[in-house]
Amino acid sequence: QVQLVESGGELVQAGGSLRLSCAASGRTFSDYAMGWFRQAPGKEREFVVAINWNGGRINYADSVKGRFTISRDNAKNTLYLQMNNLKPEDTAVYYCAAKQNYNSDIYYPARYDYWGQGTQVTVSL
Image 1 (cartoon, rainbow, N blue to C red):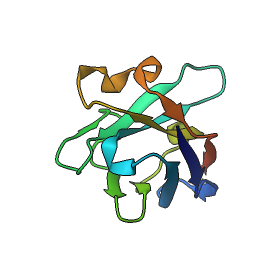
Image 2: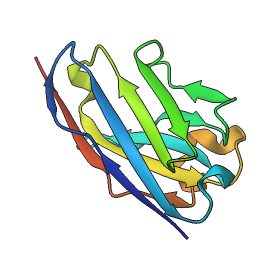
Image 3: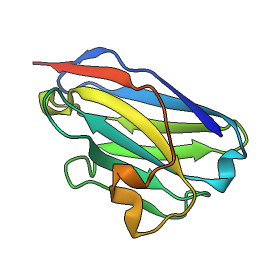
């Protein structure tokens, strides 16, 4: 089992920045590829970005490319999402998730084994 706890979400003005964290416990954090997803009200959960076990492979959704940066610190069992130049359309609950393999399945929520409870990000005009 892997337990994931997100933090860092809050209300921010458009153009602002936030850094989300995802603290992992349980099994060895570095054994897992990690992803960030988000879900806005009335919409399906969507892929934001994923990172492999050592940060050597990263894939971003086009909507966040150039604005968001994912990173991980395996020594601290923590995943991060630095979000810059935030837009109102970034408003959503953000979730971190873990899966064992970094492959073509990284884009699909159903392929992840463990999820956090989510943290709310709200971007105002």
